[in-house]
View 1 (cartoon, rainbow, N blue to C red):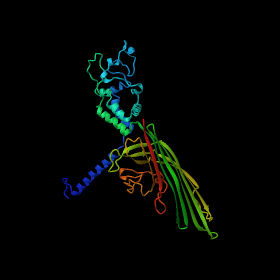
View 2: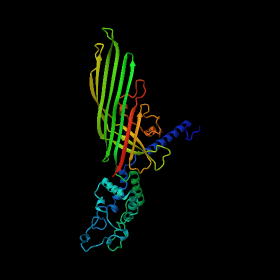
View 3: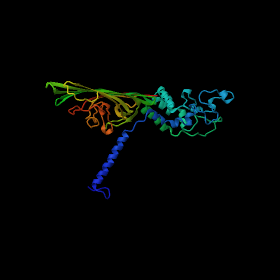
View 4: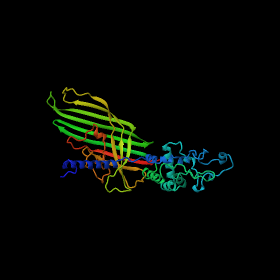
Length: 426
């Protein structure tokens, strides 16, 4: 094959093309996995305009133009101007229908989150569509502000044509950002709700090895509960599992020659309660080739805080054969700290304007299926996996000290149930 690169063989060209394709596919995957901005982050994109004097002057700030220094809102004009009543129109153009918002809409001196709450409340009362059309798009004072007019302010002679500095962006892009906040952020400031993931195992195994018969019993749960509030994701992780092993050896009494049994029992229990702050990110992901607006696939990535568990193990031996053999210590304890683990939730909504992200996942997981292609592109299952999208479940019970297979190497089934109900809030 002829090389398209001087001095390089055809195989080098193939490798180069493969590398380019690989990088392109990797870049596409990263683009698909970019975390969606939170509602508050979407709102923050509006702040350069909201904080500009053309807006803040009317919403709780002093007038930077007239020099009178009066606050917006209803004022005592007799006291302010030291003369008989003077109508607002003497200083503000009637053509701009000058008026001031109420004090509950003042945002000067308030934090960004407080301002977001004011806007979220106003948008909810107005209705999201009317908020965009009536306020951001068609309100004459906002139009005047973007033109650089001071809310229609003029000098007392009405002859001034000077304009103040307009906001740092045009009205069109500002309205688009407002729509983005309404559509993608639900006109909210944060997410509230909960995510619960519960994994459990209940299995038993019996096998013989020569004269020894062994019965194993595995039972336990690990429950992760995330509560979203105040911009934090509080995690509560509880682990409780037990392994009981009973091994019965069929022997011959050395003194009498009669059959006898030596029974060994091991009881292991591991308990743990961990609280801390988790990291949660909602990501837009294009899972299917036929996904088109307004359909939306999403994933929720969760990174948990480190977990700590306490392990207690007790052992008893019933020597029915009087062998006189020494046996290991009867009990021991220990503590374990596990690193931060993560899991991914996958969901789908038909309408991106749906107030929240809710769903559930219920399946049996096996070690042979974790991070494999076996479940890839399985749209029929509510808990599908997409290995090439970077998705995986971390099953704490399976990946730590509990076994993943029975004695014959068949996988032990672990039950996984996840549910989530996230709502947007001001």
